[in-house]
Length: 485
Ligand SMILES: Cc1ncc(COP(=O)(O)O)c(C=O)c1O
Image 1 (tube, rainbow, N blue to C red):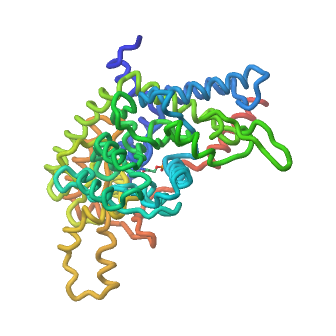
Image 2: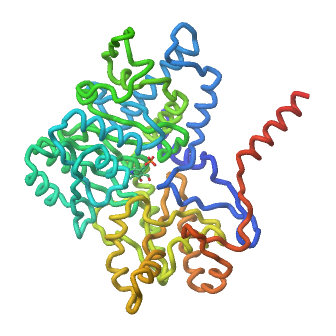
């Protein structure tokens, strides 16, 4: 049995990309500080190693006569079981389906599935902090989405407002679509309480766990009110290249029938009829599944489970708290959601003085080797609400509408620094030091930038792209032919 604390320390240092170096604006190679894990995480060494070793046995799970095909089927079963184990989701209640390349595909599928299953319930309730991927699919697949307020004090979903919405639409709410944690502020939502309310009013709970899964425990067992559907995103759980994951109550999948059909999900097909397989989740997996991706993802989750999500959460929350304290001391930094009393994970969002967020993010990259994201993070209404007071404060007197828009555009957004299991205190220190330095040497640091038509900033001396697929392929083929010669 591996020691979880020792495993955490070993695994944290075993990620692809921790030593990546890029030239800064002066041409000096710097080790990158990767603070963009909320967008996509680096790849866990163990997950990649398992996938690479498995490749010697790669085959189709739709064949069964030979060894590799049997290995593929068993691997897929293991991967599904590992996902459920990670979530403490009893296999008797829940099934796991790999789908698409992230949570967006999965949430679209959930919207279609539940819309088909309960067409008489036309309303979906979504919180105001949702990522577009847990809002727009519900709108687009025919539901009338109503937005639930956030608590002014804790920052999480306002349960009283949720209940008001449920009462106001008796028998009409199909499900509540709620993120486990915000990808903008990291604020965590009370899932069990939301599930209890939803269920009391005959609604289901769909949880977008894309952001939360790598950072906090998500437990689908041991209490009465649990999510009915949950979406995970492989590239946010240290397994880039893996599929998204739909975890849903078996009873829902059984009743709704498969979303996609084709090979692999039928028992018998004639020219004028076909019979679907009866077993869930197998009959949900039309076509040849991404066994390699599923294995990569499940391996990453298994490692996280062996370390313990409580341990990981404690480690990262401490890091974020330290980062928050350091950023709060930097003159001109304004943190968002920092006053929330709810638990927070994953990220810190901020602005620096009155500088455009995109410029700050670019300067951090170009001069300090710090990779962050800026913008509205696919959560436009939430970011707009967080910025409302500041945008009101902007002096736009005397400007016409186009002028106001021009003044506001660079201010509509924030910079986000986000952590992963591999993030070091040193990464957060580097960020705080860099922001303080930009404040002190503002003119020098901001010189030489031009704005591109799409709003991004480009430094005059920006180097050519660093990692061109054609060049990588060319180098490989060159080596290969030299070896063969
Ligand atoms: C909370 C949340 N939901 C959904 C998504 C969409 O995930 P994907 O890009 O994997 O489809 C993201 C991605 O940033 C997210 O943070």
